[in-house]
Length: 618
Image (tube, rainbow, N blue to C red; front, top):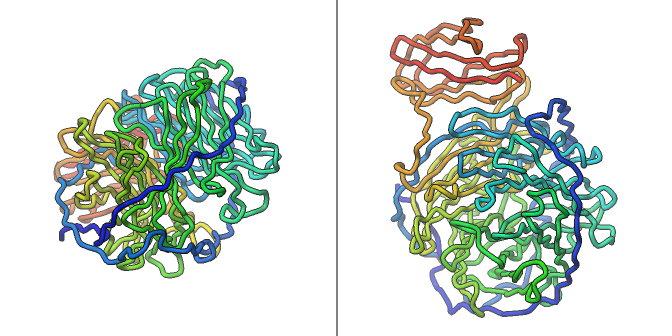
């Protein structure tokens, strides 16, 4: 069946209103607080505090604006057939495991040399795509222990700097003004297993009894930008919002461990009202500068067509450093998203709102994504927008609603996947779920002109999710996506995956990590360990302390032997030998009674199956 995309049938002349914000700014310098070596973190208690109260129901969040912003705009839609080639799937693997926290809040970065840093709300996974070896998973608490004062970490963000060949990892800590701070880590080298310089930014920087929540990061050639919301104590993120601020930092100082100079931009408003959830537009094919764009919208509106474009001009110390804002009108309205469906009617997935979740700048365009309702079926799906000529006084905005006739789509992110300055290809990755499909991840290709590929189903979950009390589970707040800068057309993503840890610990969520490309020829490191009768084999979590799971798909029945060997090649144990049926099979085993170290699981059969998987027992 051809994939379809909905766009507005009547496209009016698009107008924009320009306004110079009267924002405030102050210079703050931050000294390095600590150095931490990731590989040398040996004591890790992984403390997490899980509030099992379900999120506030979606209907209580909606703000009914006076809509439409423009008159005579039709709600009808026209159908556009897919024309772009399908995406190619490369490496696809189980990422960060569940660790008593919700939601996952995935983010991911990959270096030019193929080293991945994948983060979720409570832990960090480093994975080398060249060797297919993962370092032992470490908690955010252990990584930030020199500076976190034992307060809870959350909402991590990570980014690779292709200019410096280093990483930046940030996370807030503390949920009230007296404990709130933002930890910013700069890797000293291109090896994230090595030393990191840790800095702290005040979570209540204006000393007005507010705390910091929901960060987003981006970079120019010289600077790091971090946007974050300031909230009242003891209030929900919907009603407690006061303003979104922007930190602008000299990243080279952070890599060197020198005092970190920064600007704090605040009081960023349009027509006297704070612009909420400023999503930075990352450089598409490379880092740009010195300016940085941010996109926003009326994320709590029941229906709206306003898009805010904020720009921070020039570098720290430059006389032309200002903050400007434009209010634009998109041809395609966006809608407050409903909750996502699960395979059990008693459990649904919260979608928060329609805030911008990812954006990039390339070829004089900003492409961005967020959640929306699909008015054709009233299911949550992805909104894809394109801002043309953002530097002009009157940029234009075109929007598209991704059609989802069977699945619910949410929490998208986006990365540039083009090959040259005339190629505006983007890969949109997102979470999926439905009343028949467990929570997993998918992707689609777009070209900024209304053409799309068919949807690539990357991975379905193996269980529905039920972590919280009540009927509404957390699904966001975001997913991760990053272009591999030295390999045009290749993008890595991290999303939400439902699974059972074991028979006593069920209905949890983890991260699923995947390599996606616009063409199969781009992918050079597809796992070739599973051939012949086995169409795919996955082992997860890895590393782990006790329980490991193998998911194997067979094209026809086969008598298989599962054998465990130590690093020297000595047989430790024949785990099981038996006939295995076709299609999906799941085999689990425990290593609690063996020493920590490296092991190998060898799977052989009478129909040419011969698979070896490296295991790291923590």
